[in-house]
Length: 111
Ligand SMILES: [Zn+2]
Image (tube, rainbow, N blue to C red):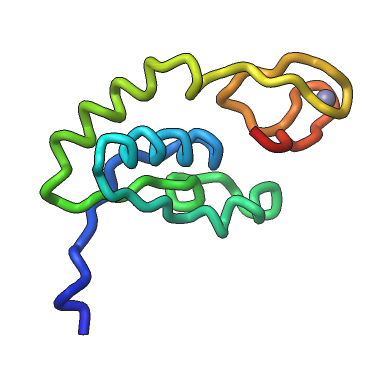
């Protein structure tokens, strides 16, 4: 039943859903099929402890393992991935790796 489903490997554990999708975008652009897993758990953050199991992760096919590793390294150096964002609630500038405003606790909205 799973014969046609490639067994994917975990390429990276992102620290936010936004980062996960940005990295996925980088891989997509290079023709690497990648999926984000764990995003359904992110909505529960705050109710359950954040661990490696609850953070969104990026999975790729085993044949793309080495290439995706290099591309993810590149993606992490790209300013877009760590871009600061401005809180819609209070106007404070928040570092890109955070998904909540440090000042008022509002969630990052949009992209
Ligand atoms: Zn705020």
